[in-house]
Image 1 (cartoon, rainbow, N blue to C red):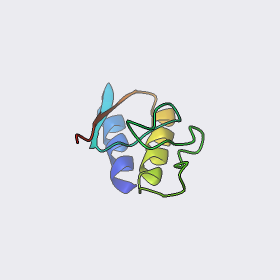
Image 2: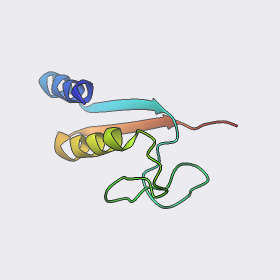
Image 3: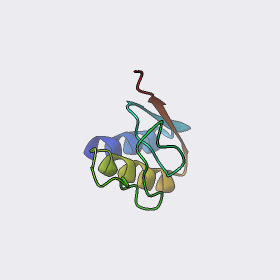
Length: 82
């Protein structure tokens, strides 16, 4: 995800204190509550229902960048309203 890499690079260049990503959608990160978001294996971030939703690549890239960023990373999401 080039745009994500570029965001972290700009933050590093500017010596930003933090990076914030805002996303709309029920991304899900773990196995805690299938009523709020898809259940995912917390180690692989793959959905447990076998029906990929397209967020796996994004979530994996974001987690990897967070681990290597050495700065605060804030994830904000908006939940689906029915």
